Image 1: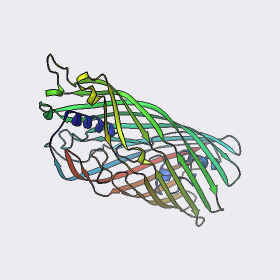
Image 2: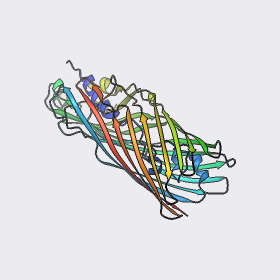
Image 3: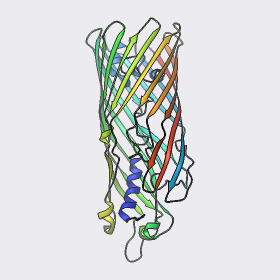
Image 4: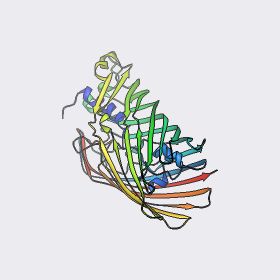
Length: 423
Protein backbone atom coordinates (compact mmCIF):
# COMPACT_ATOMS: atom_id res chain seq x y z
CA UNK A 1 0.00 0.00 0.00
CA UNK A 2 1.30 3.43 -0.93
CA UNK A 3 1.19 6.07 1.78
CA UNK A 4 1.59 9.82 1.63
CA UNK A 5 2.56 11.98 4.59
CA UNK A 6 -0.74 13.81 4.35
CA UNK A 7 -2.91 10.70 4.18
CA UNK A 8 -1.25 8.91 7.08
CA UNK A 9 -1.02 11.70 9.65
CA UNK A 10 -4.30 13.31 8.65
CA UNK A 11 -6.02 9.98 9.18
CA UNK A 12 -4.30 9.55 12.54
CA UNK A 13 -5.32 12.96 13.88
CA UNK A 14 -8.85 12.81 12.51
CA UNK A 15 -9.20 9.24 13.75
CA UNK A 16 -8.43 10.26 17.30
CA UNK A 17 -10.89 13.12 16.99
CA UNK A 18 -13.65 10.88 15.74
CA UNK A 19 -13.48 8.90 18.96
CA UNK A 20 -15.48 11.73 20.48
CA UNK A 21 -18.48 9.98 18.98
CA UNK A 22 -17.75 6.36 19.88
CA UNK A 23 -19.84 4.36 20.67
CA UNK A 24 -21.98 6.40 18.36
CA UNK A 25 -25.23 6.31 20.33
CA UNK A 26 -26.50 8.50 23.13
CA UNK A 27 -26.34 7.16 26.67
CA UNK A 28 -29.61 5.83 28.08
CA UNK A 29 -28.60 5.98 31.72
CA UNK A 30 -30.65 8.80 33.24
CA UNK A 31 -33.24 6.87 35.27
CA UNK A 32 -33.51 3.41 36.87
CA UNK A 33 -37.31 3.61 37.06
CA UNK A 34 -37.53 4.14 33.28
CA UNK A 35 -34.74 1.68 32.47
CA UNK A 36 -36.69 -1.25 33.92
CA UNK A 37 -39.22 -1.00 31.08
CA UNK A 38 -36.56 -0.24 28.41
CA UNK A 39 -37.49 3.46 28.49
CA UNK A 40 -40.64 2.53 26.54
CA UNK A 41 -42.86 5.05 28.37
CA UNK A 42 -40.22 7.67 29.07
CA UNK A 43 -42.06 10.55 27.36
CA UNK A 44 -45.51 9.67 28.74
CA UNK A 45 -44.82 8.63 32.34
CA UNK A 46 -43.82 10.73 35.35
CA UNK A 47 -42.76 8.25 38.02
CA UNK A 48 -40.39 10.66 39.78
CA UNK A 49 -38.18 13.72 39.30
CA UNK A 50 -36.20 12.01 36.50
CA UNK A 51 -39.10 13.00 34.22
CA UNK A 52 -37.20 16.29 34.02
CA UNK A 53 -35.04 14.57 31.38
CA UNK A 54 -37.57 12.10 29.93
CA UNK A 55 -40.28 14.73 29.46
CA UNK A 56 -40.08 18.02 31.39
CA UNK A 57 -43.86 18.42 31.09
CA UNK A 58 -44.21 15.44 33.42
CA UNK A 59 -43.02 17.55 36.37
CA UNK A 60 -46.57 18.92 36.53
CA UNK A 61 -47.77 15.50 37.71
CA UNK A 62 -45.57 15.42 40.80
CA UNK A 63 -47.57 16.34 43.90
CA UNK A 64 -44.68 17.13 46.24
CA UNK A 65 -41.13 18.38 46.12
CA UNK A 66 -38.73 15.51 45.58
CA UNK A 67 -35.10 14.71 44.97
CA UNK A 68 -34.12 11.67 42.93
CA UNK A 69 -30.69 10.36 42.03
CA UNK A 70 -28.69 7.27 41.35
CA UNK A 71 -25.93 5.45 39.53
CA UNK A 72 -25.79 3.29 36.42
CA UNK A 73 -23.06 0.67 36.02
CA UNK A 74 -22.04 -0.63 32.58
CA UNK A 75 -19.93 -3.74 31.93
CA UNK A 76 -19.31 -4.13 28.18
CA UNK A 77 -17.62 -6.90 26.20
CA UNK A 78 -16.29 -6.99 22.63
CA UNK A 79 -15.21 -10.04 20.65
CA UNK A 80 -12.88 -9.35 17.71
CA UNK A 81 -12.49 -12.06 15.06
CA UNK A 82 -11.22 -12.54 11.49
CA UNK A 83 -8.77 -9.66 11.93
CA UNK A 84 -6.34 -8.59 9.21
CA UNK A 85 -4.00 -5.63 9.24
CA UNK A 86 -0.91 -4.04 7.77
CA UNK A 87 0.77 -4.09 11.19
CA UNK A 88 1.37 -7.03 13.52
CA UNK A 89 -0.40 -7.02 16.87
CA UNK A 90 -2.99 -8.49 19.19
CA UNK A 91 -6.80 -8.42 19.12
CA UNK A 92 -7.87 -8.92 22.72
CA UNK A 93 -11.17 -7.03 22.43
CA UNK A 94 -13.00 -5.93 25.60
CA UNK A 95 -11.66 -2.40 25.16
CA UNK A 96 -14.44 -0.67 27.14
CA UNK A 97 -13.61 -0.43 30.87
CA UNK A 98 -16.24 -0.86 33.56
CA UNK A 99 -18.09 2.47 33.71
CA UNK A 100 -20.24 4.33 36.24
CA UNK A 101 -22.72 7.04 35.21
CA UNK A 102 -24.33 9.25 37.91
CA UNK A 103 -27.56 11.25 37.61
CA UNK A 104 -29.63 13.48 39.91
CA UNK A 105 -32.78 15.64 39.84
CA UNK A 106 -34.81 17.97 42.05
CA UNK A 107 -38.39 19.10 41.32
CA UNK A 108 -40.75 21.25 43.39
CA UNK A 109 -44.27 22.59 42.78
CA UNK A 110 -44.50 26.40 42.81
CA UNK A 111 -48.30 26.43 42.70
CA UNK A 112 -51.08 24.24 41.31
CA UNK A 113 -49.95 24.80 37.71
CA UNK A 114 -46.26 25.66 37.81
CA UNK A 115 -43.33 23.38 38.73
CA UNK A 116 -39.60 24.08 38.71
CA UNK A 117 -36.62 21.76 38.87
CA UNK A 118 -33.01 21.14 38.02
CA UNK A 119 -31.17 18.05 36.83
CA UNK A 120 -27.65 16.86 36.15
CA UNK A 121 -27.00 13.88 33.89
CA UNK A 122 -24.78 12.48 31.11
CA UNK A 123 -26.45 12.41 27.67
CA UNK A 124 -23.32 11.35 25.76
CA UNK A 125 -20.06 9.68 26.70
CA UNK A 126 -17.53 6.98 25.94
CA UNK A 127 -14.46 5.34 27.38
CA UNK A 128 -12.42 2.87 25.34
CA UNK A 129 -8.92 1.56 25.83
CA UNK A 130 -7.44 -0.90 23.34
CA UNK A 131 -4.39 -2.80 24.57
CA UNK A 132 -0.83 -1.68 23.80
CA UNK A 133 0.27 -3.35 20.59
CA UNK A 134 -3.27 -3.73 19.28
CA UNK A 135 -3.25 -4.57 15.58
CA UNK A 136 -5.66 -1.78 14.67
CA UNK A 137 -3.82 0.94 16.59
CA UNK A 138 -3.30 3.07 13.46
CA UNK A 139 -7.07 3.43 13.09
CA UNK A 140 -7.80 4.28 16.75
CA UNK A 141 -6.46 3.48 20.23
CA UNK A 142 -7.71 5.13 23.45
CA UNK A 143 -10.42 7.66 24.28
CA UNK A 144 -12.10 9.14 27.34
CA UNK A 145 -14.92 11.57 26.56
CA UNK A 146 -17.55 12.89 28.94
CA UNK A 147 -20.54 15.17 28.38
CA UNK A 148 -22.22 16.45 31.54
CA UNK A 149 -25.45 18.44 31.32
CA UNK A 150 -27.12 20.75 33.84
CA UNK A 151 -30.77 21.47 33.05
CA UNK A 152 -32.88 24.03 34.97
CA UNK A 153 -36.50 23.39 33.99
CA UNK A 154 -40.06 24.68 34.38
CA UNK A 155 -43.38 23.03 33.55
CA UNK A 156 -46.88 24.44 33.24
CA UNK A 157 -50.20 22.59 33.45
CA UNK A 158 -52.95 24.22 31.37
CA UNK A 159 -55.48 21.92 33.01
CA UNK A 160 -55.69 18.40 34.42
CA UNK A 161 -54.97 16.87 31.01
CA UNK A 162 -52.39 19.01 29.19
CA UNK A 163 -49.00 20.22 30.39
CA UNK A 164 -45.79 21.48 28.78
CA UNK A 165 -42.21 21.81 29.99
CA UNK A 166 -39.03 23.55 28.92
CA UNK A 167 -35.45 23.48 30.10
CA UNK A 168 -32.28 25.09 28.73
CA UNK A 169 -29.25 22.81 28.87
CA UNK A 170 -25.72 23.77 29.86
CA UNK A 171 -23.41 21.13 28.43
CA UNK A 172 -19.74 20.58 29.21
CA UNK A 173 -17.72 18.25 26.98
CA UNK A 174 -14.21 17.09 27.79
CA UNK A 175 -12.09 14.63 25.86
CA UNK A 176 -8.66 13.04 25.86
CA UNK A 177 -7.88 10.87 22.84
CA UNK A 178 -4.89 8.83 21.68
CA UNK A 179 -3.94 7.34 18.34
CA UNK A 180 -0.81 5.72 16.86
CA UNK A 181 0.76 6.32 13.45
CA UNK A 182 3.58 4.32 11.90
CA UNK A 183 6.82 6.20 11.24
CA UNK A 184 7.84 3.64 8.60
CA UNK A 185 6.15 5.39 5.62
CA UNK A 186 8.09 8.51 6.64
CA UNK A 187 11.46 6.77 6.50
CA UNK A 188 11.59 6.09 10.24
CA UNK A 189 10.85 3.16 12.54
CA UNK A 190 8.34 2.34 15.27
CA UNK A 191 5.15 4.24 16.08
CA UNK A 192 4.47 7.89 16.77
CA UNK A 193 1.66 8.84 19.15
CA UNK A 194 -1.02 11.45 18.51
CA UNK A 195 -2.82 12.85 21.57
CA UNK A 196 -5.72 15.27 21.45
CA UNK A 197 -7.18 17.05 24.50
CA UNK A 198 -9.95 19.61 24.45
CA UNK A 199 -13.10 20.88 26.09
CA UNK A 200 -15.99 23.27 25.58
CA UNK A 201 -19.26 24.50 27.10
CA UNK A 202 -22.27 24.79 24.80
CA UNK A 203 -26.00 25.28 25.15
CA UNK A 204 -29.20 23.64 24.01
CA UNK A 205 -32.70 22.93 25.32
CA UNK A 206 -35.28 20.23 26.00
CA UNK A 207 -38.98 20.76 25.30
CA UNK A 208 -41.88 18.45 26.10
CA UNK A 209 -45.65 18.06 26.07
CA UNK A 210 -47.77 15.54 27.98
CA UNK A 211 -51.45 14.84 27.27
CA UNK A 212 -53.93 12.65 29.14
CA UNK A 213 -55.98 11.48 26.15
CA UNK A 214 -58.33 9.54 28.42
CA UNK A 215 -58.31 8.57 32.07
CA UNK A 216 -56.20 5.51 31.16
CA UNK A 217 -54.16 6.63 28.12
CA UNK A 218 -51.34 9.20 28.14
CA UNK A 219 -49.24 10.49 25.24
CA UNK A 220 -45.97 12.38 25.51
CA UNK A 221 -43.53 14.06 23.13
CA UNK A 222 -40.03 15.31 23.98
CA UNK A 223 -37.58 17.24 21.81
CA UNK A 224 -33.88 17.30 22.74
CA UNK A 225 -32.14 20.00 20.73
CA UNK A 226 -28.84 19.69 18.92
CA UNK A 227 -25.76 21.10 20.65
CA UNK A 228 -22.91 22.69 18.68
CA UNK A 229 -19.49 22.33 20.30
CA UNK A 230 -16.18 23.93 19.42
CA UNK A 231 -13.54 22.06 21.37
CA UNK A 232 -10.29 23.92 21.90
CA UNK A 233 -7.16 22.24 23.19
CA UNK A 234 -3.93 20.66 22.03
CA UNK A 235 -2.76 18.14 19.45
CA UNK A 236 0.51 16.52 20.51
CA UNK A 237 2.64 14.37 18.20
CA UNK A 238 5.46 12.46 19.92
CA UNK A 239 7.86 9.63 19.17
CA UNK A 240 7.94 10.23 15.44
CA UNK A 241 11.09 9.35 13.50
CA UNK A 242 12.16 9.86 9.91
CA UNK A 243 10.32 12.76 8.31
CA UNK A 244 8.09 12.98 11.40
CA UNK A 245 11.13 13.71 13.53
CA UNK A 246 13.55 16.63 13.36
CA UNK A 247 15.97 16.84 10.45
CA UNK A 248 19.01 18.96 11.46
CA UNK A 249 19.32 22.10 9.42
CA UNK A 250 16.05 21.47 7.58
CA UNK A 251 12.92 20.97 9.68
CA UNK A 252 11.93 20.44 13.32
CA UNK A 253 9.55 17.71 12.15
CA UNK A 254 6.00 17.17 13.34
CA UNK A 255 6.82 16.11 16.87
CA UNK A 256 5.47 18.81 19.16
CA UNK A 257 2.34 20.43 20.52
CA UNK A 258 -0.13 22.40 18.42
CA UNK A 259 -3.23 24.41 19.20
CA UNK A 260 -6.24 22.46 17.98
CA UNK A 261 -9.89 23.25 17.31
CA UNK A 262 -12.60 20.73 16.54
CA UNK A 263 -16.24 21.46 15.67
CA UNK A 264 -18.77 18.78 16.62
CA UNK A 265 -22.57 18.77 16.64
CA UNK A 266 -24.38 16.40 18.96
CA UNK A 267 -27.66 15.69 17.14
CA UNK A 268 -31.22 16.49 18.09
CA UNK A 269 -33.70 13.73 18.90
CA UNK A 270 -37.46 13.34 19.21
CA UNK A 271 -38.91 10.89 21.74
CA UNK A 272 -42.58 9.94 21.80
CA UNK A 273 -44.47 7.31 23.78
CA UNK A 274 -47.85 6.09 25.00
CA UNK A 275 -48.69 4.83 28.49
CA UNK A 276 -51.83 2.74 28.96
CA UNK A 277 -53.24 1.77 32.36
CA UNK A 278 -54.75 -1.57 31.33
CA UNK A 279 -55.91 -2.52 34.85
CA UNK A 280 -55.42 -1.16 38.34
CA UNK A 281 -52.22 -3.22 38.53
CA UNK A 282 -50.90 -3.33 34.93
CA UNK A 283 -49.46 -0.43 32.91
CA UNK A 284 -48.24 -0.90 29.32
CA UNK A 285 -45.81 1.32 27.41
CA UNK A 286 -44.73 1.79 23.80
CA UNK A 287 -42.33 4.38 22.45
CA UNK A 288 -40.05 5.44 19.61
CA UNK A 289 -37.06 7.78 19.33
CA UNK A 290 -35.68 9.42 16.19
CA UNK A 291 -32.12 10.76 16.27
CA UNK A 292 -30.61 12.92 13.54
CA UNK A 293 -27.17 11.27 13.37
CA UNK A 294 -26.84 12.40 9.73
CA UNK A 295 -25.50 15.67 11.13
CA UNK A 296 -22.24 13.77 11.62
CA UNK A 297 -21.09 13.63 8.02
CA UNK A 298 -17.47 13.93 9.10
CA UNK A 299 -14.95 15.35 11.53
CA UNK A 300 -12.58 18.23 10.79
CA UNK A 301 -9.65 19.27 12.99
CA UNK A 302 -7.89 22.62 12.61
CA UNK A 303 -4.31 22.76 13.92
CA UNK A 304 -2.24 25.91 14.25
CA UNK A 305 1.48 26.35 14.79
CA UNK A 306 2.49 23.61 12.36
CA UNK A 307 5.92 24.11 10.73
CA UNK A 308 5.37 25.84 7.33
CA UNK A 309 6.74 22.88 5.39
CA UNK A 310 3.79 20.80 6.62
CA UNK A 311 1.11 23.45 7.15
CA UNK A 312 -0.58 23.01 3.77
CA UNK A 313 -1.08 19.34 4.56
CA UNK A 314 -1.80 19.35 8.29
CA UNK A 315 -3.37 22.68 9.24
CA UNK A 316 -6.74 21.09 8.47
CA UNK A 317 -7.36 17.35 8.54
CA UNK A 318 -10.63 15.49 8.22
CA UNK A 319 -12.29 12.11 8.14
CA UNK A 320 -15.68 11.15 6.72
CA UNK A 321 -18.29 9.37 8.84
CA UNK A 322 -21.39 9.34 6.61
CA UNK A 323 -23.74 8.48 9.46
CA UNK A 324 -27.47 8.05 8.96
CA UNK A 325 -30.51 8.99 11.04
CA UNK A 326 -31.75 6.24 13.36
CA UNK A 327 -34.93 4.98 14.97
CA UNK A 328 -35.24 3.20 18.28
CA UNK A 329 -38.39 1.33 19.29
CA UNK A 330 -39.36 0.06 22.74
CA UNK A 331 -42.21 -1.76 24.47
CA UNK A 332 -42.55 -2.45 28.17
CA UNK A 333 -44.79 -2.79 31.15
CA UNK A 334 -45.10 -2.41 34.91
CA UNK A 335 -47.13 -4.55 37.31
CA UNK A 336 -48.08 -3.33 40.79
CA UNK A 337 -47.80 -6.41 43.01
CA UNK A 338 -49.03 -4.53 46.07
CA UNK A 339 -48.79 -0.96 47.43
CA UNK A 340 -45.12 -1.56 48.25
CA UNK A 341 -43.74 -3.32 45.16
CA UNK A 342 -43.84 -2.83 41.38
CA UNK A 343 -42.02 -4.98 38.82
CA UNK A 344 -41.07 -3.93 35.28
CA UNK A 345 -39.88 -5.47 32.02
CA UNK A 346 -39.13 -4.19 28.54
CA UNK A 347 -37.55 -4.69 25.14
CA UNK A 348 -35.94 -2.14 22.82
CA UNK A 349 -34.44 -2.24 19.34
CA UNK A 350 -31.82 0.37 18.42
CA UNK A 351 -30.62 1.03 14.89
CA UNK A 352 -26.93 1.75 14.34
CA UNK A 353 -26.00 5.06 12.69
CA UNK A 354 -23.27 3.35 10.66
CA UNK A 355 -22.99 0.37 8.30
CA UNK A 356 -20.47 -2.22 7.11
CA UNK A 357 -19.33 0.26 4.46
CA UNK A 358 -18.54 3.06 6.93
CA UNK A 359 -18.04 1.35 10.31
CA UNK A 360 -14.71 2.12 12.02
CA UNK A 361 -12.76 0.67 14.94
CA UNK A 362 -13.60 3.78 16.90
CA UNK A 363 -17.34 3.30 16.31
CA UNK A 364 -17.84 -0.47 15.87
CA UNK A 365 -21.55 -0.45 16.75
CA UNK A 366 -24.28 -2.41 14.99
CA UNK A 367 -28.03 -2.78 15.43
CA UNK A 368 -28.80 -3.88 18.98
CA UNK A 369 -31.47 -5.65 21.03
CA UNK A 370 -31.97 -4.57 24.65
CA UNK A 371 -33.76 -6.70 27.26
CA UNK A 372 -34.61 -5.18 30.65
CA UNK A 373 -36.03 -6.08 34.06
CA UNK A 374 -36.70 -3.77 36.98
CA UNK A 375 -38.41 -3.28 40.31
CA UNK A 376 -39.50 -0.46 42.60
CA UNK A 377 -39.96 -0.56 46.38
CA UNK A 378 -41.99 2.06 48.24
CA UNK A 379 -40.14 1.95 51.54
CA UNK A 380 -42.50 4.61 52.89
CA UNK A 381 -44.75 7.38 51.59
CA UNK A 382 -41.62 9.51 51.31
CA UNK A 383 -38.95 7.09 50.04
CA UNK A 384 -38.86 4.90 46.91
CA UNK A 385 -35.98 2.72 45.72
CA UNK A 386 -35.71 1.55 42.09
CA UNK A 387 -33.39 -0.91 40.37
CA UNK A 388 -33.08 -2.09 36.76
CA UNK A 389 -31.00 -4.61 34.84
CA UNK A 390 -30.36 -4.52 31.08
CA UNK A 391 -28.68 -6.92 28.68
CA UNK A 392 -27.55 -5.41 25.38
CA UNK A 393 -26.83 -7.72 22.45
CA UNK A 394 -25.45 -6.29 19.21
CA UNK A 395 -25.31 -7.90 15.81
CA UNK A 396 -21.87 -8.74 14.47
CA UNK A 397 -20.50 -5.91 12.33
CA UNK A 398 -17.60 -5.75 9.91
CA UNK A 399 -14.94 -3.03 10.06
CA UNK A 400 -13.02 -2.53 6.80
CA UNK A 401 -10.43 0.25 6.88
CA UNK A 402 -7.17 0.95 5.07
CA UNK A 403 -4.84 -0.64 7.61
CA UNK A 404 -7.20 -2.94 9.51
CA UNK A 405 -10.33 -5.04 9.11
CA UNK A 406 -12.16 -7.35 11.52
CA UNK A 407 -15.53 -8.53 12.77
CA UNK A 408 -16.76 -6.87 15.99
CA UNK A 409 -19.46 -8.31 18.22
CA UNK A 410 -20.48 -6.24 21.24
CA UNK A 411 -22.59 -6.98 24.30
CA UNK A 412 -23.09 -5.34 27.68
CA UNK A 413 -24.69 -5.76 31.09
CA UNK A 414 -26.12 -2.69 32.81
CA UNK A 415 -27.36 -2.11 36.35
CA UNK A 416 -29.10 1.09 37.48
CA UNK A 417 -29.98 2.04 41.06
CA UNK A 418 -32.08 5.06 42.08
CA UNK A 419 -33.49 6.58 45.26
CA UNK A 420 -36.33 9.13 45.38
CA UNK A 421 -37.21 11.12 48.50
CA UNK A 422 -40.30 13.31 48.74
CA UNK A 423 -40.63 16.27 51.09
